[in-house]
Length: 299
Image (cartoon, rainbow, N blue to C red):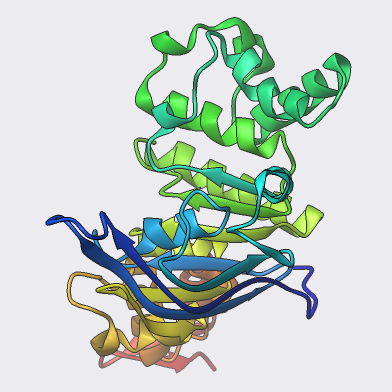
């Protein structure tokens, strides 16, 4: 992962209220302090209503803080129209509901819309669309498919492709695998991970699927009732399961890794997945035998 010491996102004592001054006023974020460095892959997790999506909306000016300051690439998100345009060029935000982002009639037109708005030529936008569609597992021949005929899962892939085609420096993904089958979801996350590694893209992943954090992120922020309750290395936070907010379950991968380690089997963090567990256990069985429930090295 390419990462440097440049801070690209800062939140200082940020709070946010929905419907202020009305009977429906609700405090969604409370005194948030956050810094994200260029190249980081940050996952924000928490139960529904914990403030995850609100935090994401503050990062590109969709929402403005009720209190405090949000700065992205040195720009105050409450800036004028010129600042907002610059933010849109640098920050790509895939919203939780794909229908909120799809407004063209055909798949290809929608994916190419962002690059065209950035001033690229038709040929350049077409190539951006081709590359972005491939990255999310869509064949370029699907460019002429009417969007209304797509399933919700396919619409999500089109929405993600449309943002990737703009090649943002900060990519915000809000529940990116919702509605996708497990194989498609894994393939998408693998592709996004490779893209972030290759281009040095900074990632902010909003999810309630903690297993996705292990696959994609190197830092996790745990939200609880509008506040940041934990912030750090995913492995360390998930291994301390008793400190997670109620309703957040430790990923099965972590449970399996802990059991293997307790049995004396060493397994690298990168192998905390089905393939890694299978290979590690197979290798261990080639070199050890089980006696009285304990693993013993073969002579």
